[in-house]
Image (cartoon, rainbow, N blue to C red; front, side, top):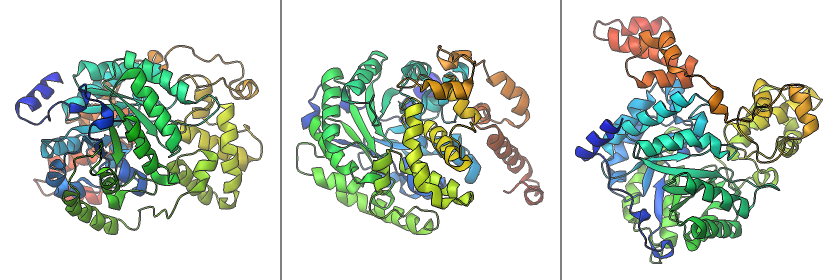
Length: 490
């Protein structure tokens, strides 16, 4: 895949290397903005349903803004593209790469989980990273839900081998075992792993301004690496914390164009640009150039009004129970489906208790789903830990990694009995998966990346690949409508 990157360099499809790696003091350098509208913003406010066709009309304008980077891939966008939008996520990336000739493209990768909800073999992780960089990604942000750096090792090593920018990411949370000093130690470890930059990923909007300053200042003093801040507006703290981290020397913040901002999304790009204008951290971005981009996304907000989450004000429950906005909305949805919406206060109170018993995992995919599901079962079943899903048992067996704090021994014995938890890096125990995938789905594979799509999401990818095969092979002879009528919607 290095050949693909070299080809893109020759064709002028790669931007110049990031200037933020130079020696200039960050406190007096312009603050970079990563625009999240094509990834986390629409994942946060409209369940990742933004189609590629809705992105393309503003790509040229966005390429002229001078963003530090554009987050366009990763997270939930991969399976949502196939599952709900009938789009090939790899083709989406290739098209966006061709459109953005001046701006770095960035993705979010869940370490050994990649973009799925379990750990994958080292072989799959390396091949995925090769293909992601080869198809257009410049900056790979890698995190692990437990902050277990063992789960970052393989992905990080491959990013470095591909010559891309490695950004290692701290999953921020609050607990008796998570404090500024612990996060600073983690940052130093990530620096030793070869990170080009670091990111504080505050998925629940819990990072308060004073803590934000202390943490950002400490990491900059300890490592000297470029530091990026990611937060969500759900609690109303994010914009204030961004300004404090900028004052402390952070280099980049994640923002969303105003119509797709705030609520469960990021602070508004325009607001941060305006707040810093004329000062030592001026972003250098022209507000007037953002106006037509905002107009486009305002029209999209109206187009998607039926699915956009309209969160007015802040959600105090996020601060009380320290859970991400997405996890909160999922709990509400699950309880409504069970006819138990009135049990929400009980479930919210159960989440911190379950989290403590599970060693205080940060609540981010996939641990947020694991903890939330168990808390819900504890309440609805009527007896705590009587019903335990396979994913929860695997967590107690160490198959997701090392928890930040010791597990509750009584609960552990109840969940796994006499079984012995693993102590090695979980990925070491997983055999290669690509050859088996080729045997299972090879007849429908058109591109090498299709095998990776299938390994990550077997049922979703199989349906998608079969439909795509039908479209490509039968449209020319007029059979596409017939196939669509036979249960393959085109």
